[in-house]
Image (cartoon, rainbow over all chains, first blue to last red; front, side):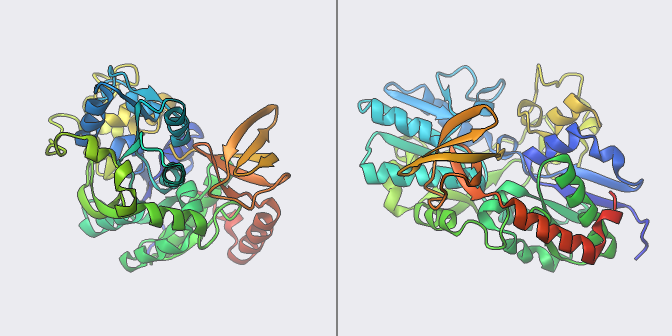
Length: 330
Length: 76
């Protein structure tokens, strides 16, 4: 395999997206090597349908809905509703404890890192018998999405830069399931040195070719991850189908509340099921999230779509590929 | 959204802990990392400590890997 062949590396973590852009690491890759963003930005991949459900709950009488601040930005469905920002599910739980007559809903998005904290919060709610606390879960797991992406062959991926903090929970071993695709996967941290180290290892492995998993973030990530967090998640959640912008519905990629937590499931508060996901008419965020389109190649990028006036989720979220590239340049 | 920050545990009371990063102190939950105690460096995400940050062990592993694979020479 020629050492100078062109290669496409993909990161799948909103925090990596921002850090790579901020440190200008793309410009330091050798010619012929591209680094693209994949489906790693939680707000970007979350479908509009479940956000509309959350907005409906936020507008309901007697309900206070909390969610992560990025989801409240324009033009997302929750903007302009009475939904309140929270940095942690625990904040919503504490509010529910202090206001027993109010139904408190936490709208949970994000990957395993965040899902583990939501699971621990739900377990506490159950042990307290907190009947007024509910979770609307759009939480998801990264491996089914990566598997779907690599199986689809819809874009070239020669190496995956895997998310450090998701891996703190799941460990580095589960990525071995991707070895059959012949694509190396490197778990990397977030500061400049850690990212450079991760990219250097990934590039070396990608040039060699073949599936292999390396943990380049051993400061935090253990091979088996945080097994207690995994147990708590397995107690609270069950795998479910989930819709991903750009990838469609992926079986087993969502985290729904399990039978023991049914009474805390905000789905029971909804009058109707989630509507069909509509394809975005002009927004190309779906293509960006598959790594099939570089943000600057979108005709709206920087013109009709900027962080101040975003047209789509990859520009809305500060962790979106479009917002990061607009803010920090290529 | 998966941003996490390292901080040092100062005080523990049940599943609640006070952590510090430079001049800043705040309260976090220990349900996901109940063995954390005063003096430990932990990684904090969304109000919870999620993992220990093992500075020394990490340095040792990386030194070994760099020696074996020559990673330092493989600048991106």
